[in-house]
Length: 245
Image 1: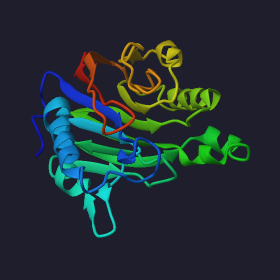
Image 2: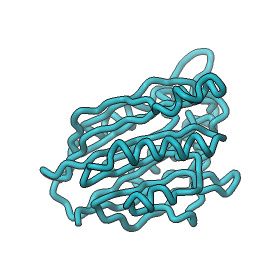
Image 3: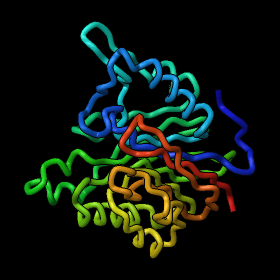
């Protein structure tokens, strides 16, 4: 159910769930013998450890586990039941972005990165990466929300995609950008007037001790940034509090 729209602060989270296959496939590989324990862990993380007003997810998957006989859909029981507003983008290769929100969302759009078209001939997978944008409301205050996933293993491309977003939203007074940025260099955001939530100390991609996931804001205050450790994905969720200035 929707929560109070006039709180002092709001909990925002971003998580690359890796399709619950640790990023190795575009669908879950959790088997039926372990799914119950993993399901309980996921529910506890979502309800207790994260408990977000707005949750942005990269590499989203409807299927928590599957076998020859059945498929279990997490969206129905865990996400849609707790969030009044939701938007799920298309599954393109490994890329699938989604937003789940207890706060009002309006004018949600899926947008491809323009730079991806330029590099598509040399790097076809770059065209799979996209972002969702929406008008998010803290009470009656409009904020531009972006859920992004930039191209992996191509730092120059991901930096160009970040530059594209900064240019697109340069005239917006209040912006929240969440996602897996596939870079550890967030200086473009800082130089563009954004406050960086993850300063690099929170290693959201534990396999290589990388700080790839971040929440950055403009025209807002961000605090209490933390990660939630779990083995359900190859990434950890990143959680913060955001308030109006």
